[in-house]
Length: 425
Image 1 (cartoon, helix red, strand yellow):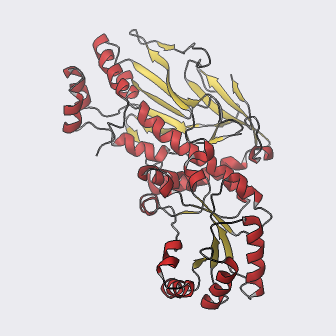
Image 2 (spheres, rainbow, N blue to C red; image 1 turned 120 degrees about the vertical axis):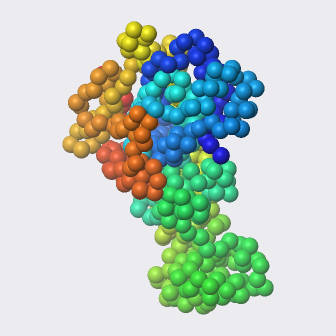
Image 3 (tube, rainbow, N blue to C red; image 1 turned 90 degrees about the horizontal axis):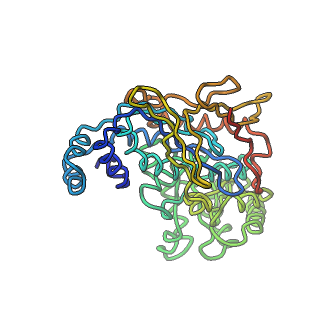
């Protein structure tokens, strides 16, 4: 299945009308940006770029697509779509980069006809993936160096689950439970057993012995099906003091974790780790900083953006050529939705290596800091380094470097303004 019909109808009706008006082939520049961050957030994380480039490369209209579209589009538009290939250029923030209000995270240049019909695809990918990555980055900060695993596949759509796992990995999560994300993007996978496995057997001891026999003593045993202290005692008795970990999925975690740690140490299992997986978000993770938790598993809150499931990004025309070949800036003047016209050249202004401003030069490049736009597609040819497993790993590394530039207060979970101001120059 191609990605072409992952599109809102109005994009194709605009194309239809523009072909008839003679304006469809004007060179145009569209920008993707967010007017504001979710309330109280201090930064956002760009994610989804590698996935998006694959989808743009696959953006074709096959015979079935065209037959369906011919029921409401004119024959000339169907002829255009039959041969559609994106031949323009795209630049953008590196995947894993941080963004702020007004940041032009993606710039699409091509004819109006070929660029306008990418709007929904671009926004559906970047809005969701960036929402998950932004939430994940806050959770990573709250975990203070302890590893986190993404395990939210059962709490979102099947395709979104894969996207979420990838986005979380870019933002610093260590692993996912989703096998498709492991297969397609190289995200490390993890998982042992759920309560159903314990309930299947005639006793908890029988279940533990079966799991240890299959997976070895280094496995993680789920200890909250019945009685946690009894299960911890049983787990060490069955697996020995080399038991890899115990998992707690319910209860008053700060209290339980301390009790379980003391019990494990008293049984001689001093190296057995404790992982917790009970409806966690960045705030509950932060509340567990003083507890002897070794790792976290996060599901629902992560894949829903921790209360902000979309990033609020928009796709707007900011410049186009006239019939005489001159470039003109265009902008909306709508109340509370006004845009800044003209091609943008964003830079991250740094002072002694610390981010101080998001400086956006309008019309021509500046020289006030680190350039943020990189080429992603040039005349229809994709940058081979951005998609795939290699692109995902590179995005994760770039994110770590970008986070390291932020002032310390930016990682606070308390409500606040964006970590750095956006300045137009």
